[in-house]
Length: 314
Ligand code: PMP
Image 1 (tube, helix red, strand yellow):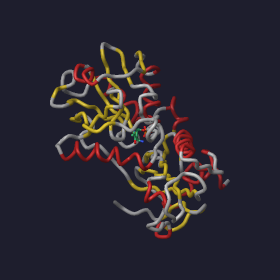
Image 2 (cartoon, protein in one colour):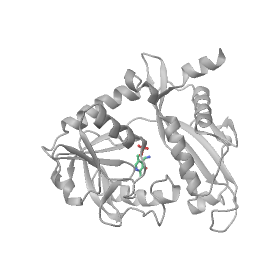
Image 3 (cartoon, protein in one colour):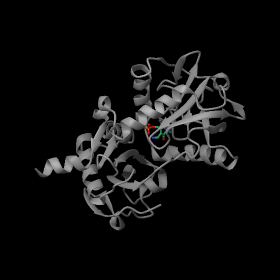
C-alpha cells in the first residue's frame, strides 16, 4: 500500500510521518477506538473527486465514538470540510479510501472508557476493488459468531470488535472462499466480515434489521432506497435463517469497500442459477453511476472535492 503524504492529526493537517502514537496508547492495547471508512471516486471526465455521503459517514462515526464515551467538538459538516482539505492537499486524481479514527490516546495501563484523552485522525489512501470476485463470490458460513449488542455493539465501528471480523475473514479466505457470512447469537444471518447482506426470495428483497447485530451500513441504506425507488421492488427488513440463503434466488453484499458484491455460491451450493442475477446487475450499474457523480437524481450523495475548494477560494 502507498503511504499518504498527509494526515489530519492533533487538530491540523500534518505530514503523515508526524501522525504517530506510542506503543502504550490505550486504543492500541485495548481496542478502544472507533473508525469510519468512506470512498471518494475520481470522475476523469468531470475532473472531479466525489466523496460518497461523507456527512452520513461522519454522523455514524461520531455515534460510534459516543458509544465509547468520546465526544468531539467537530460536526459532520466540519469533518467533511477537513476531509476535502486533506484530499486537496494530497491532490488525488484517482479512487480513494478515507479512514477517520477516534481513539483513546492516553499512554497508560488500565481498562476503562472514562477519564481518558480522545484524539481524532483522518487519512486517505488510493483504493480500488476489495473483493476480487465481486460478480461471482463464493462465501461460507463462518464457525465464528457475530459480537452481540451486549458484548461490543456491532452497530458501531468499534476497533476492538474487528478482531471478530478478522477471525471470520481469515478462516474463510485461508479455506479458499472469498468471504464469510456470520450468524448472530440467535442463529440468524447478520452480515459478512465487513459488509451488509441482501437476499432475493420469491420476488421480495430481504435484509436483516438493525437489531440483528449488524453495522448500520451507509451502502445498505443507499441500496435499500435504490431497491424501492429505482427498481420498484418490495424491501423487507426481517431476520434471515441460514437455510434461506441456500434456497434464495439472488444474494449480494454491500459495503464501502465491497460496494455491491454478487454472491453466486454459498458453501458449495449455487445461488439461483449460479451466476450474478438481474437485481445485483442493475444495482451495480446504478450504484456505479451514482458514486462517480453521473446520476443527476442522486447528486446530493456526492460531495465534490475540487469544486468545493474552488468555491471557497472565490
Ligand atoms: N458491516 C461491517 C461489519 C462493516 O465493517 C462494514 C464496512 N463499513 C459494513 C457492514 C458496510 O458498511 P458501509 O456500507 O457503511 O461501509
